[in-house]
Image 1 (cartoon, rainbow, N blue to C red):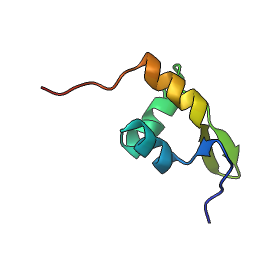
Image 2 (tube, one colour):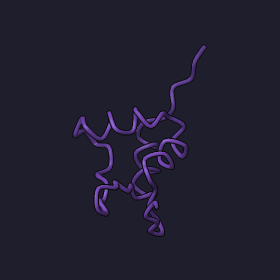
Image 3 (cartoon, rainbow, N blue to C red):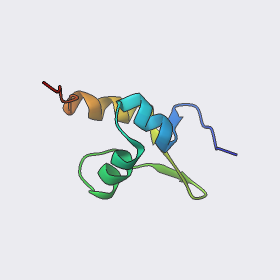
Length: 65
């Protein structure tokens, strides 16, 4: 069962929200850059939506030619 907390997204939901793959979410999280730090509920990382949106504003999606 997936933990649900209002205002937070699972890795898959965060990936869908940002338009990236789940693998990229974990890679960005592991780089310790300015990607939001998740809240851990047990072993499940949950990312705050407002921080994901702020990160996306600083890092617009790349457009492919």
